[in-house]
Image 1 (spheres, rainbow, N blue to C red):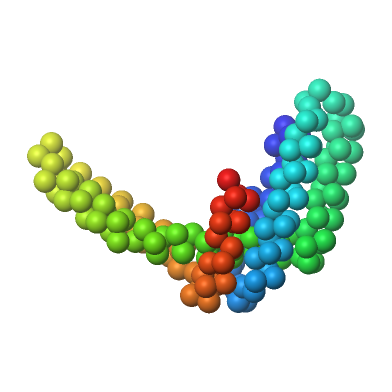
Image 2 (cartoon, rainbow, N blue to C red; image 1 turned 180 degrees about the horizontal axis):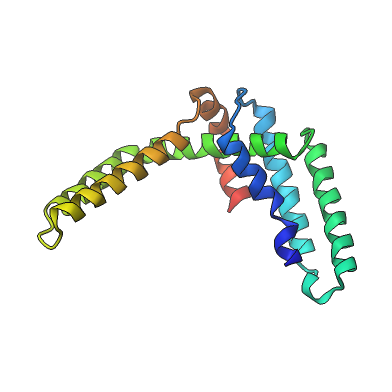
Length: 172
């Protein structure tokens, strides 16, 4: 249970910022700082995962958890982020710009695949008209959702381009 709680603040903050996304343009320094923070955080997460919090007393686990949180916040601050919210916002902005760039490269191929899938649904004799309509709506909604998420500002996409290889290496 404590292991789960230890890192739950990160996804919660990320989700919050996806929903309340307030944007300032990305700079090269922002991208470098996100990459640096993620590299260092990954190293520390790996070290901290060596602890078996389930085998510790609650007090020991709480102390380790608080110490880890303090350490992670120190890393985030070291890379120029005043708090976890600002770091999460920058992280999501970099991720969104990177994903938009990759999708731009794949867009013609993806559009062809979507059209092919929709044609297969329409031409499937084993589906009822209602099933076909439902599946087509689901595909359209899915495509729109991804399109909205990947609609990063062009300036952010341009800022991220020189860092694509490093981002891929860092986030693999």
